[in-house]
Image (cartoon, rainbow, N blue to C red; front, side, top):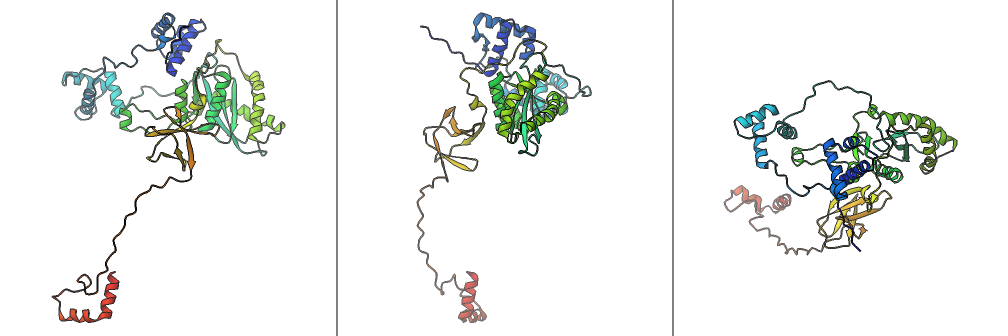
Length: 434
C-alpha cells in the first residue's frame, strides 16, 4: 500500500487553495477569486492552472526558502538612507532617486526609495483629495465578511447583572449570532469566535472596531520598523494563524450594519428575555440558541451570489491552542516561571530558555515549549537557594589609648591635653563619634 505524501502549507496557502478549489468546481469565477485573494486575474489564472496540473502541492510557492535574486544589499540601503537624511534632506522620493543616480551612481526605483523613507519617518504620503464617506455595497457571498462588535447594555434589566453581547452579523445575508459575557475582553472574544467557527466555519474576513481587545495600540520604534516588526493583539494573532483577514473600521458608522442590529436587539431581545424571566447570563445564552434561528428567519436576506466562503477547520487544527492567551516567559535557572503573581515549577528537563504560558477559554493553564506541553506544579514561593553563609571574623574594639580614639595627636596644645585628661569629656566625645 503506497503512503500518502504530506504537504506542509501555511494558513494563507490553505485559504488560497480553498478559493481556487471553488473555481475548479465552477462555484466561483476567476475574476471573483482574484478579488478575494487580492491578486491579479493573470496570477489567479496561473495558480489555478498549476493546481489543476500538479494537485494541491501546486499552491506552494516555488521560491519558498530561497533568497531573492534581485534584493538590494543592506549596506546600500543604509548608505541611501544616510544620504537622504543629511545630503538630500527634504528631497522627495522622485527627485532623490534622480540625484542618487546622477551624483552617487546608485540606481533605485522611486517606489523603493519612497517605502524606505516612509519606514524611516523621512517621508509622509500626502492625500490629494478630501476624505469622504460613501455607501458601501453588500458583500456578495455568505462568509465573505462578518461584522463584529460588542454592545454594553442592561440586557437583563433589573433582574440580573450588567453584561455585554458580543455579536456577529454576516454582511451578505444579515445572519446573526452572538453570546452574552460579563465583559468584553480577549477570552470572551475567543470564546465567541470559537462558537462561530464551530457553527459556520472559518470566515474569509472580520470587520471590527479599534477596541484594545482587537487592535494593538503599541507604537513602533524606528528599530521595529527597520526590522519589519508588527505588533498584533492576541485576537489579531489568532486570526492570522487561522487565515482570517482583519479589517479595522475608522468609525462606528463604517460598520453600521451591526450597529443598527444592536438597536433591534435592545428592543426585541430585551423584551423576549423579560417574558421568559431570564435573570442570569447562563440562562440568557441558553435562550439565544433558540432565539437566533427565529431572528435570522425574520431579518436575514438572500445573498447576491450563491455560495459559502466559510472554510472548514483544517484537519489536525487545535482551536483551543490557537484561541488562547499566549504569554512568553523566561525560564529561570531553578526551572520556575512567574505568571500573574504566581510561581510554577517545571518538572520536565532539557528545555530551552523560554516557555509559553497558555490561558485557555475553559480556564485551564498550559505551559508549552515549541508546541509541546510541559508538566508543572504550582508553588507558593520560589525555592530557596542554598548559599554558603559567610563567617565574619571577630572584630577587635580598639582601646581608649588607641590613636584612632584620641581627639588630638601628640603635637597638641596645652588646652588640648587638658581636654584629653578630662575623662568624662573624652567619653562623651567618643560616644558622639560612634
